[in-house]
Amino acid sequence: MNNSELETKRLKREVLIRLIKAFLSEDFPENTRLIPYEMRPKYSEVPFRCCVYKERGILRARTLAGLGFSIEDDDEKTTLATYAKKALERQRPDPNPLTVVESACHSCQAARVYVTDLCQNCVARPCMNSCRFGAISHVNGRSVIDPEKCKKCGMCVASCPYGAIIKTVVPCENACPVGAIAKDEHGFARIDTDKCISCGKCVSACPFGAVHAKSQVIDVLRKIKEGREVIALIAPALMGHIPCKPEQIQDALLKIGFSKVYEVAQGADITATTEAKDFKERLENGAPFMTTSCCAGYNELVKKHLPEIKPYVSDAHTPLYYTAEIVKKEHPDAVTVFISPCFAKRREVLDNPNVNHLINFEELGATLIALGIEIDTCEEKEFEYKSSKEAREFALTGGVANSVVAAWQGEPGAVKPVIVNGLDKTSIRDLRLYAKTGQCQAGNLIEVMCCPGGCIAGNACLGTLKDAFKKVKDYGEQGQSLGKGKE
Amino acid sequence: MEKVKVKICEGTTCFVMGGQAVKSMISTLTEKYKDKIEISSVRCFGTCNKSDSFSKAPYVMVDDEQISSADLEKVIAVIERKLNNE
Picture (cartoon, chains in turn orange, green):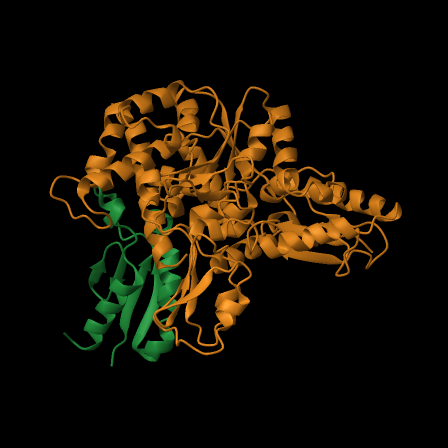
């Protein structure tokens, strides 16, 4: 998180905290309506935009996302109070996880290639020669790019010996690994839900904080308030993103009103052993390689953009899948809530009837603040199930591959992990190549994680990668290895 | 000379509002200030539980001065002031 990201994330989190406080108050609709006015009261400073009214307008849109609605569908006439009431009546959350605040986004200029004042009017004119589209001409002693013809390939940028040509980018478009977000004819960023893999890279990339996750926090809190049995399934990454000991997390969640807490690491043990078995069978049947199957962003990528790699993806289910199966067996009537480091899991949750809701770490943090729960004063309590070292470290890059190695029952040394640490255009191209040629020189077990660093670097995380890594690692060290007893 | 003490709150509110990111940014300053500053994490100051004050988290203390909505620039400004005895 850099300084600018900090600012947008704080703003988003403040909205969530106020929204949850409003939910807990006597008058949810009215106090929701007041959020933009409380954050920007009369005569208040205008830190970011042109005037207080625009700031309130944007805050209103952010509140809408917090309530779980699509900002794109907003008619701007309906009050937040009405939306708050609608959120309470909602039976099913919106299927697409992300939404764009149009009014916040408009400030962005479309991506373009531009010749700066530093053009030296050289004789060689490599820019003109490099352009395959005839977009560059020479006017008044300087190269000029015709935006109509320019395809933004960047060849001229690379060719200029003075570095005088620049390519500007739109941060969200640039961050998206699958080209799912782009400006529409009005200049607003639009998410193409057919292409979007819900990875959330655009959420973190936008310096205006214009991309939001549609929250389910109100749905979850409502069910808790109704007295339902609501069970939290916590992702292994959470241990790295909360300022307390891992043993205190249970008590903190019980204080929110969850009736029980399961570690998703429990299911990760099953994923690891299932995947090791699957891999052994595949190798015996002559498969050249296998990829892991637990990252929701990657699974969406396979479904929407990379179907050719599907035969190579492990049939093992995700840790969340196995954990939710256990929970629903033990508590068939319970509402299950996955506590997630990322947005991509939203899609997986939607397809899995055993998981009812998802709230991410940011929303969990906001809930703790709204309820005034000081987490480092919470009681310490061990989890009933003792997860393995490897399951606890599933959230780290390389962690899933390590777990398969630890659970491996075949010939020693046969597993050769390849780590895809983050999905971007380059790594997607590599994966496509492996699938097309049916070979991967670097190894045979390809671990794919959408976020560089693993789930502890998910786009809804609270702390820094470095600290989270250390905490998850420390917790892992306290667990027993899956490989123990082998040899 | 006594070191300037920089304390970053690691209570729930400050943590959720980005306190750890601020701490990691401040930690890069040890190079510049070498033995002039001392950075530590502390438990909740208790500032955040008053009405709306959660919105001004994360809080950082530089000696006896409290910084709200702390970011790198604000913290550096106060450190500089303390070091120059202003």
